[in-house]
Each structure stands twice: as structure tokens, then as C-alpha cells.
Length: 274
Length: 301
Image (cartoon, rainbow over all chains, first blue to last red; front, top):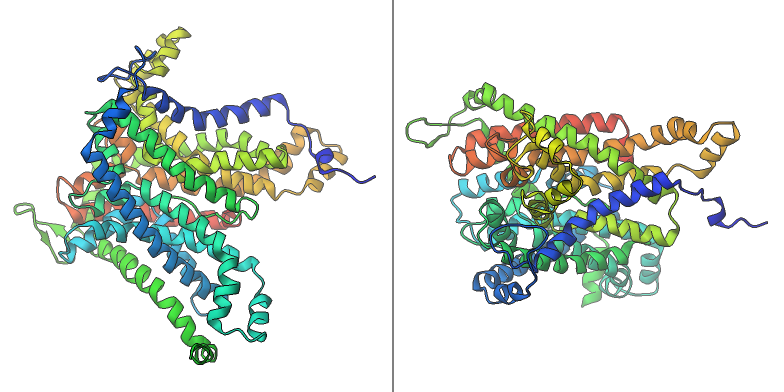
């Protein structure tokens, strides 16, 4: 009799199911609580149960100039850092995939380093170097910092895809008379397109949300995470912060969710840490 | 024309390789490694006590400052927190990882993996903020504890020296909870990956040979999941060591490494001392990575 895979799978005990569910709830309920707090009329404390319900904070947050400026800055930084990561990460992945060369292992290690070491190390190292060369801290120093840890995300995704693409397809294309550019355009690019998309979206989410490296590489600029961070240590606009936090969760959720969907079957989004 | 360029490059794979490698290597090698090197150099400088300026001369004076009792205490406190967080995360990550790897149906598994991965990529800061709401004195957790009439035990817990504080949102216990929460996905995924690789036939063989389920779990599954636990612990340990957001948000005047680095560099303007301080986590992580590689953790990454 052909055995169905679900037949061989053992049944989980109730204890295990409960423990797994508990961990899952622990992971997600806190975010839901922020959503709830966007409705509180209470401006100065985090009183629970909420003393009432109001929708006015959405309007208040919408009218805040400083938030729009921060949002715009964060989007610009994330976009440019993502483009840089896409170019550098793909080039590195292509090089590592194409040929064996001296120090190939070292490249992977070098690219992973910014996310393997605590963020504060990357942050203070960049600050020391940039400050030491008397370069003013600006929009571009934030981008430079973000690109260092975004490259590895694209690199991992694209390299994993390259490894599953058979080299014979490229050879076949060349044999059929296509030149390198045509081969890239019609064979390589369609193959790695979703990996680029997934890597790019993860890099974008990572950059949009980053705070540790940014605190060290920003001058007077306030990205959205820096704005939230200032509210964490000195809460002045609690209700508005709730709205902003909710917004950040939703805006980063979309690219991450799509990226995961794009690559769940192929499981090539490993290597993600801050 | 394009064909000629194409042929030119095709015949020179080394040139193509060089063209591919130069931009990323230039960026990562010069900008990133260069910065790390600048940091290392700075840790060997010292600050002039009177003028507050950095004296660019080789000295070990700054490193000596790290071993003052105050700084030693910061190191011990941070490492202790990192260890506690790592152990707690391993304990609470295991059931979910085990369930995903061995019991969930393929459909459910896809969703569970997404549910675990999304917090890994997103909103680190927002997730810290969530706990500021939850742990607040007037917040939801206190309300819940009140409901269960457990405020007595909570007050007792908060009165303990070393881990207590004025409220959960301003105490080491609160920080511990938040750290545990934030790094949890980093522990679940490697354990799940490790368990995923345990072949079903091995478990069947174990039960065929007469082992009870609990025995199979203890003697087959746990040892094979261990590299995953070690891999996860690299993240939970390293991330806790270097974090300054959580201590700044929920901590009190007792510093952690990240916080100390942040304030030496910022308000005190003492870059050499901040640089020397970061070498602490870097060294700890390098030693940790070497041990982890011995234990086979890299296969589970």
C-alpha cells in the first residue's frame, strides 16, 4: 500500500501543542497590543483597560510635519541602500558562483560580518572612521552604514538561487549563439528575478527599520526609527508614537511577507540577523 | 559590436571575475573593514584627561581602564544577562521548533515558518516599544497580575536586589523579558532547521528497538538538535551583548556594555574607551564562534 506522508507523521501531544501555541502567541500578541493602544484617549499614561476609545490620534499623526519628514528620509535611505545592496550583492554572488578563486570563503565571511557582529560595533566603527576623516555626518553616511548590512541579504538570496540554477542552461544559451548580454537578459535575469525581488524587499525592510547603526552614522537627520527611539527614552507624544509604531509594523510587514512567500518553497532567505 | 565585446569578455574570465569582485570588495573591504580597523587603532589611543582631546599615540592605558571594578561589573552584568536570555530562549523556542519540524502539516508549516520569520526581519524598535506599554506600572500586565491576585509575589520579585526595580518597565526582570522576546525567532529557526534534518527512519528505528517516546526524545532528538541550539545561541548571545536600546529604554542606572559604549562615545566623547569597550563583545563573539564551530553549529545555520 502506498503510504501517505501524513500517515507517517506522528501526532503531537496536547502538552507540546499548547507549548507551541504559547510561544507563537508570545511572539505576536505584544504587537497587537500596540494596535489596541492607538485607540486610547489617554495621553499621559499607558492605563489598561483603556479609559475609552478615540480615532483622533490617526488624524493628529497625519498632521505632523516632523513625521512626514522622517518618513520621507527613511524611505529615501532604504531605497538607495537597497539599490546599492542589489548591485553589490548580485556581483559578489555571481563572482562566488562562477569561479573558484583564492579567498572565496573569505568573501562570504566578510559579507556576513556586519550582521554577525553586534550592530553597535558596526555603528561605532563607521562613526570613528567617518569622524576621523572629518567627513560631515549626512544623508549619505546613513546610506553607507545601511548598505553594509543589506548587501549580505541580497547576496544570500541570489547565491542560493544561482546554486539551484544549472550552469548547463547558460552554456546552452551560448551554444545557440546568444552573446553574454543576451544570455544575461534572457536566461540569467529571469532565473534570479524573484531572488532579487525577495532579497531587495528584505534589505528594504531591514534598512527602513534600522536604528542602532543609524544613531551612530546620522548627523541631525531624524529617520523614523530615530524618532521612535527618542520617544522610547523620553516619551512626549505617546498616542502619536502608537500610531507611528502601528504604521511601521504594517509597512514592513508587506515586503517581508511577500519576500517570504516568494521563497518559502525554496527556503533561500537564510542569513537574516541585525 | 555587442558580440565583439561579449567575445572579448568571454575569452577573459579572470577579467570578468575582477570586474565582478571589485565593487563589492572595494565597498566591504575599504569602507567596512577599514572602519573596523580605525576602531581597533582608536582603542590603542587615549584621551587627554584635561583637554578631552584624543592623543594619537600608542598606549594600553585605555585598555587598562576596562579592568576597573566598575567596568568589570558592566561586563559581568551584560554577559550574565546574555547567558540567561540564551538559556530561556532555548527552553521556550524548543517546543515550537519541534512542532514545526516534526508535527505540522506542510500547509501549516509554511504559515508557521512565516509567523516566526516575520518578527525576525521587522520592527525591532516597535517590538521593544510594545513591551514599554505592556510592562508599564498602569499597563496590561499589571492589570492581569492584579486580576489573578498575584501582586504580592510580583512586589516581592521587584524588591529583590540585583534583578528588581521600581516597576517591571524599569528593572532587569523587564529587560530580561524583552530581550527574550526580541531574540526568540533567532533561536527557533536554527533549532527547527536542525530538527528538520533528523530523518524519520532514525526515530522509527529507535522505537523499533524498544525505546519509549520519552527515551527517543532524550537520546536521539535532543543530541541531534543541540547544534541548532548552539547556532541559535550565537545570535541571542551576541545580540544581547551589543544592544543598547533595551537597557536605555527599560534599564536603570546600572549600565550594560552597549549602553556604556554609547555614552562614552556620545556624551563623554571618549572614542578610545568606547572602542576598547566594543573589543570586549568582539573578542567574546570570536571565542564563541570558534567554540560553536567545534560543536558543529555552523552546519545548522
